[in-house]
Image (cartoon, rainbow, N blue to C red; front, side, top):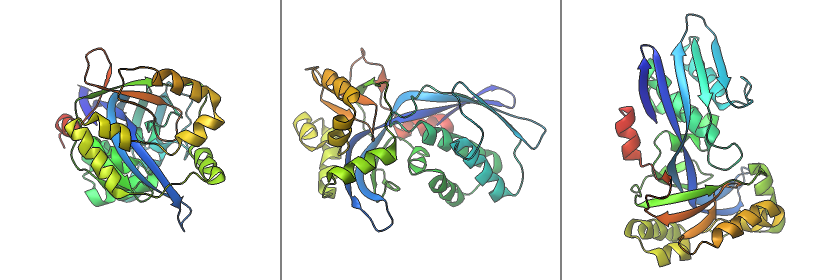
Length: 288
Protein backbone atom coordinates (compact mmCIF):
# COMPACT_ATOMS: atom_id res chain seq x y z
CA UNK A 1 0.00 0.00 0.00
CA UNK A 2 1.17 3.52 -0.79
CA UNK A 3 -0.40 6.55 0.87
CA UNK A 4 0.36 10.04 -0.37
CA UNK A 5 -1.24 13.14 1.17
CA UNK A 6 -3.06 15.14 -1.52
CA UNK A 7 -4.06 17.97 0.78
CA UNK A 8 -5.16 18.22 4.35
CA UNK A 9 -7.66 15.45 5.23
CA UNK A 10 -7.37 13.84 1.79
CA UNK A 11 -5.31 10.76 1.01
CA UNK A 12 -4.34 9.03 -2.20
CA UNK A 13 -3.92 5.27 -1.85
CA UNK A 14 -2.49 2.76 -4.33
CA UNK A 15 -3.55 -0.89 -4.28
CA UNK A 16 -1.29 -3.27 -6.22
CA UNK A 17 -2.40 -6.27 -8.29
CA UNK A 18 -1.01 -9.78 -7.89
CA UNK A 19 -0.10 -12.69 -10.09
CA UNK A 20 0.43 -16.35 -9.19
CA UNK A 21 3.92 -17.48 -10.18
CA UNK A 22 2.74 -21.02 -9.54
CA UNK A 23 -0.57 -22.44 -8.29
CA UNK A 24 -1.22 -26.09 -7.47
CA UNK A 25 -4.77 -27.06 -6.44
CA UNK A 26 -5.27 -30.14 -4.28
CA UNK A 27 -8.32 -32.18 -3.39
CA UNK A 28 -11.40 -30.67 -1.76
CA UNK A 29 -11.19 -30.59 2.03
CA UNK A 30 -13.84 -31.48 4.59
CA UNK A 31 -14.76 -27.79 4.90
CA UNK A 32 -15.59 -27.62 1.18
CA UNK A 33 -12.49 -25.65 0.19
CA UNK A 34 -9.61 -26.98 -1.89
CA UNK A 35 -6.07 -27.05 -0.54
CA UNK A 36 -3.70 -24.88 -2.55
CA UNK A 37 0.03 -24.30 -2.81
CA UNK A 38 0.95 -21.06 -4.53
CA UNK A 39 3.49 -18.26 -4.84
CA UNK A 40 1.76 -14.87 -4.79
CA UNK A 41 3.52 -11.81 -6.15
CA UNK A 42 2.43 -8.18 -6.30
CA UNK A 43 3.15 -6.21 -9.47
CA UNK A 44 3.14 -2.50 -10.24
CA UNK A 45 -0.31 -2.44 -11.88
CA UNK A 46 -2.57 -0.79 -9.31
CA UNK A 47 -5.93 0.70 -8.44
CA UNK A 48 -6.16 4.14 -6.85
CA UNK A 49 -8.36 5.39 -4.05
CA UNK A 50 -8.97 8.95 -2.93
CA UNK A 51 -10.26 9.14 0.64
CA UNK A 52 -11.48 12.11 2.63
CA UNK A 53 -13.57 12.49 5.76
CA UNK A 54 -16.98 14.11 6.13
CA UNK A 55 -18.99 15.32 9.11
CA UNK A 56 -21.81 12.81 8.66
CA UNK A 57 -22.12 9.23 9.84
CA UNK A 58 -22.41 7.96 6.26
CA UNK A 59 -19.98 6.79 3.61
CA UNK A 60 -20.05 8.23 0.12
CA UNK A 61 -18.69 5.86 -2.54
CA UNK A 62 -18.07 6.45 -6.25
CA UNK A 63 -16.09 4.48 -8.79
CA UNK A 64 -15.26 4.26 -12.48
CA UNK A 65 -16.74 0.75 -12.30
CA UNK A 66 -20.41 -0.12 -11.90
CA UNK A 67 -20.03 -1.03 -8.23
CA UNK A 68 -22.80 -0.75 -5.67
CA UNK A 69 -22.28 0.14 -2.02
CA UNK A 70 -23.52 -3.11 -0.49
CA UNK A 71 -22.15 -6.30 1.03
CA UNK A 72 -20.96 -7.56 -2.36
CA UNK A 73 -18.44 -4.71 -2.31
CA UNK A 74 -15.28 -5.56 -0.32
CA UNK A 75 -14.80 -1.90 0.65
CA UNK A 76 -18.31 -1.86 2.14
CA UNK A 77 -17.51 -5.01 4.13
CA UNK A 78 -14.30 -3.45 5.48
CA UNK A 79 -16.15 -0.31 6.61
CA UNK A 80 -18.92 -2.36 8.26
CA UNK A 81 -16.40 -4.58 10.09
CA UNK A 82 -14.35 -1.62 11.32
CA UNK A 83 -17.49 0.21 12.51
CA UNK A 84 -18.43 -2.83 14.58
CA UNK A 85 -14.94 -3.11 16.09
CA UNK A 86 -14.61 0.55 17.05
CA UNK A 87 -18.33 0.89 17.88
CA UNK A 88 -18.63 4.13 15.93
CA UNK A 89 -19.73 5.21 12.45
CA UNK A 90 -17.25 6.27 9.78
CA UNK A 91 -17.90 9.37 7.73
CA UNK A 92 -15.86 8.77 4.61
CA UNK A 93 -15.83 9.87 0.99
CA UNK A 94 -14.27 7.11 -1.11
CA UNK A 95 -13.47 7.38 -4.80
CA UNK A 96 -12.08 4.25 -6.47
CA UNK A 97 -10.31 4.43 -9.81
CA UNK A 98 -9.90 0.84 -10.91
CA UNK A 99 -7.13 -0.18 -13.28
CA UNK A 100 -6.98 -3.85 -12.28
CA UNK A 101 -9.43 -5.65 -14.58
CA UNK A 102 -12.22 -7.36 -12.61
CA UNK A 103 -12.51 -11.09 -13.17
CA UNK A 104 -8.88 -11.41 -14.24
CA UNK A 105 -7.56 -13.28 -11.20
CA UNK A 106 -5.33 -10.38 -10.11
CA UNK A 107 -7.05 -9.66 -6.80
CA UNK A 108 -8.45 -6.20 -7.50
CA UNK A 109 -11.28 -6.35 -4.94
CA UNK A 110 -9.02 -7.92 -2.31
CA UNK A 111 -6.16 -5.45 -2.66
CA UNK A 112 -8.59 -2.53 -2.53
CA UNK A 113 -10.03 -3.93 0.70
CA UNK A 114 -6.58 -4.41 2.22
CA UNK A 115 -5.51 -0.86 1.43
CA UNK A 116 -8.65 0.64 2.97
CA UNK A 117 -8.31 -1.61 6.02
CA UNK A 118 -4.69 -0.55 6.58
CA UNK A 119 -5.68 3.10 6.23
CA UNK A 120 -8.47 2.74 8.81
CA UNK A 121 -6.13 0.87 11.13
CA UNK A 122 -3.79 3.84 11.14
CA UNK A 123 -6.64 6.30 11.63
CA UNK A 124 -8.20 4.44 14.55
CA UNK A 125 -5.23 2.59 16.11
CA UNK A 126 -6.77 -0.84 15.51
CA UNK A 127 -4.59 -3.72 16.80
CA UNK A 128 -2.92 -5.95 14.23
CA UNK A 129 -4.74 -9.07 15.37
CA UNK A 130 -8.14 -7.47 14.79
CA UNK A 131 -7.03 -6.24 11.38
CA UNK A 132 -5.89 -9.73 10.41
CA UNK A 133 -9.22 -11.16 11.59
CA UNK A 134 -11.18 -8.63 9.55
CA UNK A 135 -9.02 -9.34 6.50
CA UNK A 136 -9.80 -13.06 6.67
CA UNK A 137 -13.51 -12.31 7.01
CA UNK A 138 -13.53 -10.05 3.95
CA UNK A 139 -11.69 -12.39 1.56
CA UNK A 140 -9.06 -15.14 1.27
CA UNK A 141 -6.52 -12.93 -0.53
CA UNK A 142 -6.96 -9.85 1.67
CA UNK A 143 -4.44 -10.98 4.35
CA UNK A 144 -1.74 -11.29 1.67
CA UNK A 145 -2.36 -7.78 0.39
CA UNK A 146 -1.93 -6.32 3.88
CA UNK A 147 1.79 -6.84 3.24
CA UNK A 148 2.23 -7.66 -0.45
CA UNK A 149 5.53 -8.59 -2.07
CA UNK A 150 6.24 -12.32 -2.39
CA UNK A 151 4.43 -14.94 -0.33
CA UNK A 152 3.89 -18.68 -0.26
CA UNK A 153 0.26 -19.48 0.52
CA UNK A 154 -1.02 -22.85 1.74
CA UNK A 155 -4.21 -24.21 3.31
CA UNK A 156 -7.07 -22.67 1.32
CA UNK A 157 -4.76 -19.73 0.61
CA UNK A 158 -5.02 -18.07 4.02
CA UNK A 159 -1.81 -19.52 5.57
CA UNK A 160 0.97 -17.18 4.50
CA UNK A 161 4.73 -17.27 4.69
CA UNK A 162 7.05 -14.55 3.42
CA UNK A 163 10.28 -16.33 2.48
CA UNK A 164 11.95 -13.34 0.82
CA UNK A 165 10.86 -10.93 -1.89
CA UNK A 166 11.72 -11.62 -5.52
CA UNK A 167 13.14 -8.97 -7.82
CA UNK A 168 14.60 -8.76 -11.32
CA UNK A 169 11.56 -9.87 -13.33
CA UNK A 170 8.90 -8.20 -15.44
CA UNK A 171 5.52 -9.39 -16.67
CA UNK A 172 3.45 -8.74 -19.76
CA UNK A 173 -0.30 -9.06 -19.19
CA UNK A 174 -3.06 -10.02 -21.59
CA UNK A 175 -6.73 -10.04 -20.61
CA UNK A 176 -9.27 -11.85 -22.82
CA UNK A 177 -12.76 -10.40 -22.97
CA UNK A 178 -14.24 -13.46 -21.27
CA UNK A 179 -14.27 -13.67 -17.47
CA UNK A 180 -13.94 -16.76 -15.28
CA UNK A 181 -15.58 -16.92 -11.86
CA UNK A 182 -13.51 -18.68 -9.22
CA UNK A 183 -16.33 -21.10 -8.20
CA UNK A 184 -16.75 -22.08 -11.86
CA UNK A 185 -13.03 -22.75 -12.23
CA UNK A 186 -12.96 -24.96 -9.12
CA UNK A 187 -16.05 -26.81 -10.36
CA UNK A 188 -14.18 -27.56 -13.60
CA UNK A 189 -11.29 -29.03 -11.61
CA UNK A 190 -13.70 -31.27 -9.69
CA UNK A 191 -15.62 -32.31 -12.80
CA UNK A 192 -12.48 -33.18 -14.78
CA UNK A 193 -10.56 -34.67 -11.86
CA UNK A 194 -7.63 -32.28 -12.24
CA UNK A 195 -6.72 -31.85 -8.56
CA UNK A 196 -3.06 -32.53 -7.82
CA UNK A 197 -1.04 -34.03 -5.00
CA UNK A 198 0.62 -31.06 -3.34
CA UNK A 199 4.38 -31.15 -2.74
CA UNK A 200 5.66 -28.38 -0.47
CA UNK A 201 9.21 -29.15 -1.56
CA UNK A 202 8.36 -28.12 -5.12
CA UNK A 203 7.20 -24.65 -4.12
CA UNK A 204 10.25 -24.06 -1.90
CA UNK A 205 12.55 -25.17 -4.71
CA UNK A 206 10.70 -22.92 -7.15
CA UNK A 207 11.09 -19.90 -4.88
CA UNK A 208 14.81 -20.68 -4.62
CA UNK A 209 15.03 -20.93 -8.41
CA UNK A 210 13.45 -17.48 -8.75
CA UNK A 211 15.93 -16.08 -6.25
CA UNK A 212 18.93 -17.51 -8.10
CA UNK A 213 17.60 -16.91 -11.62
CA UNK A 214 17.62 -20.63 -12.48
CA UNK A 215 15.42 -20.42 -15.59
CA UNK A 216 15.51 -24.16 -16.27
CA UNK A 217 14.18 -25.01 -12.80
CA UNK A 218 11.57 -22.24 -12.99
CA UNK A 219 10.19 -23.76 -16.17
CA UNK A 220 10.23 -27.25 -14.64
CA UNK A 221 8.49 -26.37 -11.38
CA UNK A 222 6.03 -23.55 -12.18
CA UNK A 223 2.48 -24.63 -13.03
CA UNK A 224 -1.16 -23.69 -12.63
CA UNK A 225 -3.72 -26.46 -12.12
CA UNK A 226 -6.47 -24.25 -13.53
CA UNK A 227 -4.82 -23.98 -16.94
CA UNK A 228 -5.90 -27.39 -18.23
CA UNK A 229 -9.63 -27.13 -17.48
CA UNK A 230 -9.95 -23.35 -18.00
CA UNK A 231 -8.14 -23.24 -21.35
CA UNK A 232 -10.25 -26.18 -22.52
CA UNK A 233 -13.54 -24.61 -21.43
CA UNK A 234 -12.76 -21.05 -22.55
CA UNK A 235 -11.37 -21.13 -26.09
CA UNK A 236 -10.77 -17.38 -26.17
CA UNK A 237 -8.40 -17.64 -23.20
CA UNK A 238 -6.66 -20.53 -24.93
CA UNK A 239 -6.04 -18.40 -28.02
CA UNK A 240 -4.47 -15.64 -25.90
CA UNK A 241 -2.39 -18.19 -23.98
CA UNK A 242 -1.06 -19.72 -27.22
CA UNK A 243 -0.22 -16.30 -28.63
CA UNK A 244 1.81 -15.31 -25.58
CA UNK A 245 3.47 -18.74 -25.48
CA UNK A 246 4.89 -18.15 -28.94
CA UNK A 247 7.27 -15.46 -27.62
CA UNK A 248 10.72 -17.11 -27.50
CA UNK A 249 12.13 -14.45 -25.14
CA UNK A 250 9.77 -15.27 -22.28
CA UNK A 251 10.64 -17.44 -19.28
CA UNK A 252 7.11 -18.86 -19.01
CA UNK A 253 3.45 -18.22 -19.76
CA UNK A 254 0.92 -18.65 -16.96
CA UNK A 255 -2.72 -18.11 -16.16
CA UNK A 256 -2.93 -16.02 -12.99
CA UNK A 257 -5.20 -17.43 -10.32
CA UNK A 258 -8.23 -19.05 -11.93
CA UNK A 259 -8.00 -16.56 -14.81
CA UNK A 260 -8.80 -15.00 -17.09
CA UNK A 261 -5.60 -12.90 -17.13
CA UNK A 262 -2.62 -14.52 -18.85
CA UNK A 263 0.93 -13.27 -18.34
CA UNK A 264 4.39 -13.79 -19.72
CA UNK A 265 7.30 -13.63 -17.31
CA UNK A 266 10.58 -12.12 -18.49
CA UNK A 267 13.96 -11.25 -17.02
CA UNK A 268 14.28 -7.59 -16.06
CA UNK A 269 13.84 -5.31 -19.09
CA UNK A 270 13.17 -1.61 -19.49
CA UNK A 271 10.82 -2.40 -22.39
CA UNK A 272 8.18 -4.05 -20.18
CA UNK A 273 5.90 -2.04 -17.96
CA UNK A 274 4.80 -4.24 -15.04
CA UNK A 275 7.61 -4.76 -12.57
CA UNK A 276 7.38 -6.71 -9.33
CA UNK A 277 6.48 -4.76 -6.20
CA UNK A 278 8.25 -6.04 -3.11
CA UNK A 279 6.89 -5.76 0.40
CA UNK A 280 9.96 -3.75 1.34
CA UNK A 281 9.06 -1.07 -1.18
CA UNK A 282 5.44 -1.04 -0.05
CA UNK A 283 6.40 -0.82 3.63
CA UNK A 284 8.72 2.12 3.07
CA UNK A 285 6.00 3.91 1.13
CA UNK A 286 3.20 3.44 3.63
CA UNK A 287 5.23 4.04 6.75
CA UNK A 288 4.59 0.54 8.11
